[in-house]
Image (cartoon, rainbow, N blue to C red; front, side, top):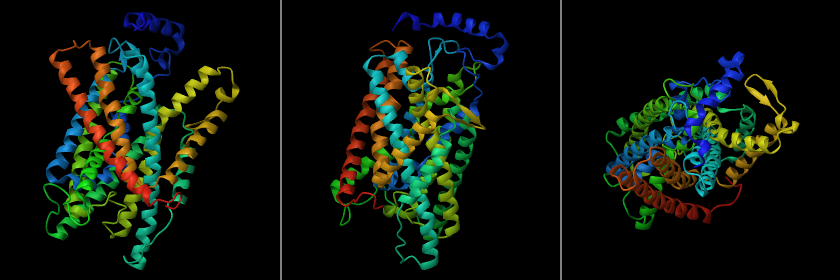
Length: 477
């Protein structure tokens, strides 16, 4: 660590910032940036928007692979690991003193301050690849929901025997056009309203899925499913059972993933007291607890309703056909939520590229000149680069329309490094946990165990993607 990063040098910098901007002190934080206004509630909304995403819809399928014992147990285990490592990561927002130490604006900044070296590059590649992957996954999910709205009306009109086939490509293009518009909102702090709308939508469609599941279970007169999940037989070989069980772990990991944007969310919280870490830990506790209750209810009721036949997307796999208008409401809520969630996950990518461009070409009018219209800040560079990003993710989504496989792979690949490894390593460095101590051994054991789970889940997802590619034709979705 270079000596200038030490916390003892930060207070003089803060004083000079305040002294140099006496008239504007009320508008600036200790780092000279505009005063942050985020609260416990806005941070919770951002997390819930990021966490209760499309992943909730694949949980019934995941529990069907694992059964009544391992399924809920895996969900509780991932919830605990996600919460615990998020509290460690929240401690790393400031380097040194938790209230006056140097701020880390992004996940990568935190890794740079605490670990440095090649680990920064590794973190950047994994984090931004994951965020791009999530954007692609959400584009696929939104198109499936829009397609389901059309199919629900078709089934209602023509009967369940009609295949009601249609291409998902026009819906992906429509979603992309909407994202180009919302992508012009300049930064995280200004999309709080979109996060709150998205969080409300996530509760709406999760509640509808839950209510339909309860109603169908009552109609069935019994709980479907078994203790060990899908049985090996004519439809499922022992190899497929293993691969699907491993992919289920990836699906559950994806359903809880938000660590890669935690620091960015924390950077919206107003200055201490209380410290941003304390506020973030409280917000994480509320969000993960709320999410877990919803996940358990939706996943378990979906499995209880359909048993081994649980679809990989509860509201679009047409386990339910009626009431068709309620399915439409749920799918509209999914689309609105995904519009917000896409922005929550993509803002860190946008900010990273724009900071690098501004540093490389500080005098360029193409990059720096802006025209503000409400929440939108229009600049030629932002319009060009963000629109190009949305276009690329949309085209890739049209090439890869198998949602469940993509979700499982993303969850598996990013879970260990972003949710476990980096938070654990940064916490050990920041808190100077002695090597070989009980706490150090426990943290390393947690990290190694999660690495094994990640590798196994990734293997399961890759096997399924290979199977899907055998019968796949590009742009034919």
